Length: 434
Ligand code: S3P
Image 1 (cartoon, rainbow, N blue to C red):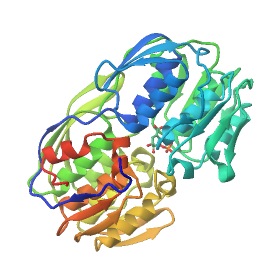
Image 2 (cartoon, helix red, strand yellow):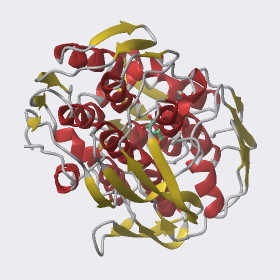
Image 3 (cartoon, helix red, strand yellow):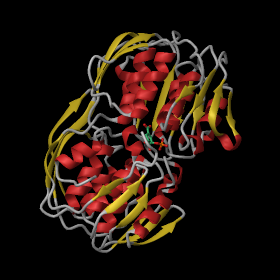
Image 4 (cartoon, helix red, strand yellow):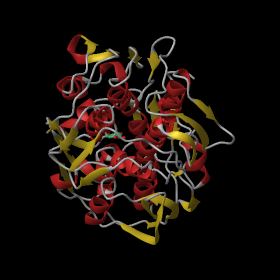
């Protein structure tokens, strides 16, 4: 795959169809991890065939876990039990995946052997101090490169002890790293969050039979239990669905139906914001799938107007800002985003990249330290950079739909990290991406 893969997204008329979006990335990572540490054979359906989640599966194969792939989006994991992993025969490559690296750091801190975690250029710039510091307070010994950056060296054979944690950033990755270390830590491990974040680790530990207490913004568990194999059914990833929710909202004459999308309330903040902007998105056929709420989403085009994005929704839509910026650029009036400095330490500095890209498309945008002010109305043709960030690349594909001419987007190969088949699915419903 070439780092310079360039896509060109062209204006189009209406988007139509019924789509199945690939499986949830966060849940797919966790399903592999817990199934690997469980006793017995687990099957995972709806597994995301993305590069990030495949890197996590590869990591466990290299630590002695047999993982079969009988068909696409399915994995059968022969769990080795909590203490059954073996040292990999070299560094573990987490690719582009912050979730993979941060959760593995917690889990590997409790092993008997040393591990080394490496990542690609983007992951190698992402802060790891946020997991190293709380894990060190539990007795872990982890060293990083200068500035707390990967690669990470995790010492084995440390005896961990439980602790009470109040992380300064609202981060499900930090919370999950702590809880996974907590499986190996003597006593009680507790996390209290500044804002509630996605609770997939908590729900999945429960599904694998580990006693855990949790509620909105807190979780508590103790050591001394076992994980029992179970079957996991992964819903469609709301963050991938988000590109189609915005696309169909802003392209006049569109109507899309998205099947069985994960509706965990800690993920669906964008729905609230799009509705405040005037979007017409209906939830149909609410049900649960593998312990997670899912629904079919029917979206019709609507005239969007700018809003002040409530800061209380930021954590619940943390991955959706690139595409929200595009919705704001296509809307009438001003959208204000604040309270989102975390966007600077994602796969790219998403505030900077979206501000630079939209400005290149003639949109009036002011970048702030923790957000932006976007003047909507008109998007011109032009050329933008994605900085190898999958969500920036897909967001600008959506911008191209309503631009005055083609939008060329550089460096799109990393879309495969989270959304394999994006171009085919998008073009199948009316996008025009070359
Ligand atoms: C994730 C948590 C979020 C999110 C990321 C996936 C997870 O990161 O942005 O895409 O699976 O726990 P932070 O924990 O850094 O907010």
